[in-house]
Length: 304
Image 1 (spheres, rainbow, N blue to C red):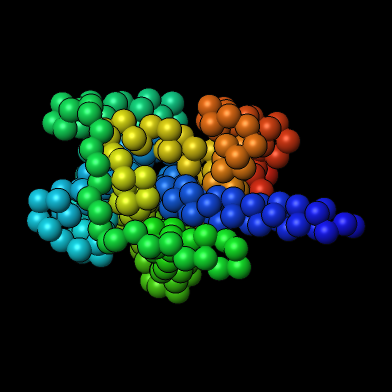
Image 2: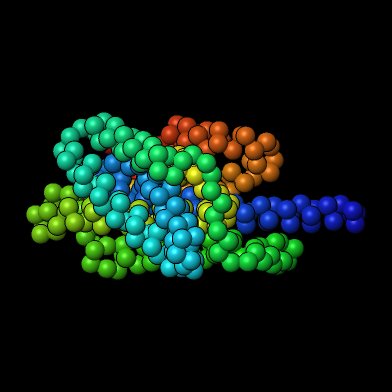
């Protein structure tokens, strides 16, 4: 191999690693949103299509906490997560709980209706014009082995990793986590064993919504732009990520989010950016055809 060829290969590898880092940053956001989808589905077998709009509410809550109350990043993130958690509980209590014993299609249509309600309320209150997210901290860029990282990417990776570790601990090592796993395994048996199923479902909605809100604030920091319709496409892509990893499987949602983020970044780098949304749904179709249970899911027959 000549010197020129060696330099070309080195540059190519450096570009691939750079795009991989960018994809992991974006995938971490998709993973946080996908966790809400997969947790709710694992508990009550419902696809909460209003989840992307809760992500949008989280972004706006963080925006106003920083802009109006001049709060630093972490308190604004915490407030956004609390507001979204409360909203998730209210939605579950008012919209989904009365339909728990109804058909799946009734709950699905209700979820779509709740999504439109949140979207249009946000449009009415905040108008459709995009808003610039406040600069939480000065931009800094770091070079590590020829790969560029900025403090926004490091913040996204750090917050996403921390929240995923906390979620793993809660699900596997706490009393409420054991209750969540029991309800996911068998709702009726868990109720007979004395578990407050309604409380567990509400907590599941609260946790999933809080994670989506964190993703919304991180997106505002990363892209410096939010609007009332921002939850539609990321919400759908996160749903694809949840299906890709195995809907109802928490590690699968994390893996699916990372795969989606990396795939999207490489598609943008190799082709036109207009293809990135189409690729997400192409991945969904392929997964449903080849492995309907997802990468980490198990195939289970069930009557609908």
